[in-house]
Image (tube, rainbow, N blue to C red; front, side, top):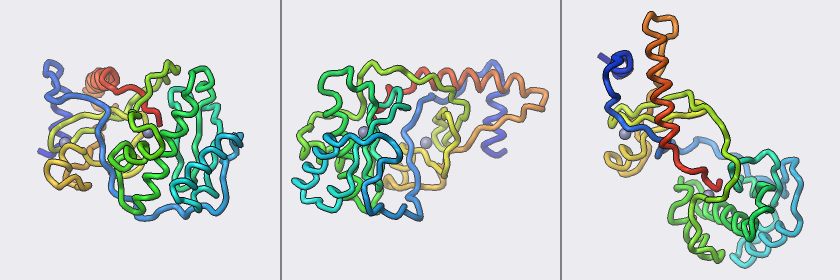
Length: 243
Ligand SMILES: [Zn+2]
Ligand SMILES: [Zn+2]
């Protein structure tokens, strides 16, 4: 019996407790085949540019001996952000900030440097894939004077109410992950890749989308169980990331 039918059977067994824990990650994706071409001029992506913050970032990049990046950097305000404090777009060299940061003392600067550290780390990594908040990001933070920065913010920004309707399962460890959208590309279970293939993406641990046929007689039951799994996964979801 293949994995999917085994999982379906498990989910159809109403009395059974799922043998896996649910959470929102961690995840690992294969390196993209093509990288976007780098921009040649600052890009605000149609969002209002903050001249002063852009100037501050430019100066920081010059201090880090990155004159090319200093020419490209743009800091903009994105009024569509809700629970996210800031976002770093690479290789566009654009930092997007949540206008609600104005309500919190010192947080505009803090978030801007957090995002700038992402751009610096991605740039230095070149084509190597790095963890968003890994060693490279941490050392860039230290160089930018925020050595104690953490990956996630604890600001009381409004939480996004989202439904994570797509459930994925690791074929190896049966970890279940709930997603709002389907993965755009193949994604593998990080703990299994770390354990069995030295942290590199390994197709053997590619997450399997759990699908239920709504027309089957048991479709209703299966959906109810999936809804329960999704609810648990949502409860165990981590705090919102700063980016
Ligand atoms: Zn796994
Ligand atoms: Zn971050």
